[in-house]
Image 1 (cartoon, one colour):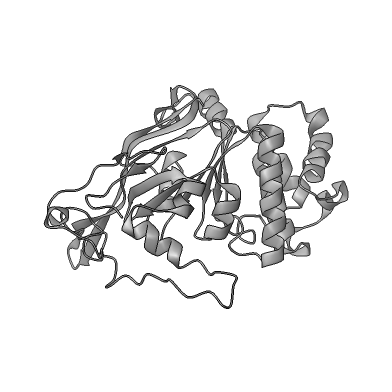
Image 2 (cartoon, rainbow, N blue to C red; image 1 turned 135 degrees about the vertical axis):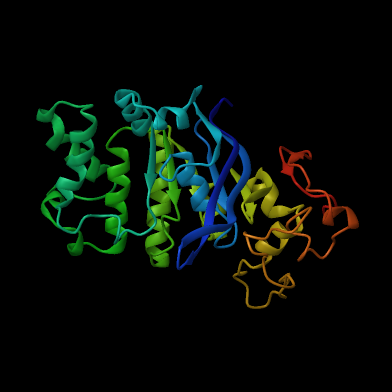
Length: 327
């Protein structure tokens, strides 16, 4: 399969400043995303998982220049898009924005409460001008029907919809510019379980029907197993393991991945718990430990782990692993 998106050595650091009487000064840096590299094939759904605060959302937003990356490159279909987003060529920026779209986590905060749904869906057409104005209303009606809503819903306001319906509007807004790559930032985390299933089924159907490519960010590993072809596991701003979903869920090699998967509830009241409890707390991203950043909590850490950071290298079965002493 051909890679549609390729991320190379992405880095995002935030300065930490201390205020004083005579002004502020920088006292350190937080490494939110630290040398992250991965690729997403055309038509694939890659899931990015990890604990809250590990850098999943910052990685995605840096990829689309919603927050400026400190360094690194993001290639889309042969074009380095971060340099495009930083440039002054507005037509090129709009072409890149059309191809790469972001679906936000909170369906309540991502919609303007003063706009009708029709106004919300009309805005992408107004900005990008990729369709003549005479077609806008018909296209809005078609978008609403594609995501399971009715054309008459275009006249309603966000507060008149349920959370699941608002998230469908978010999907329709992302599809309005006919993208090829969608970042789905925890799109079902704030929804009821039954509604989650509906939205996930919709996303799977849209990927098959429109040939979309997904980066799916979530801490809900059950939904990850349902929607993703491959899974990338992040810890403290770095990727520690990438593998096909079924292989990863069947037998994780990294000790952090194993602990993460062991926390998934098993729908069997008679099953014996196999939870792996990690010792301690994650280190501060402002004061990362030397060597492997997981060694302070790893049950199988070697002396080498305390001094030498492991590289993310192939380890068979289409897997990439960053570990000196895997399971």
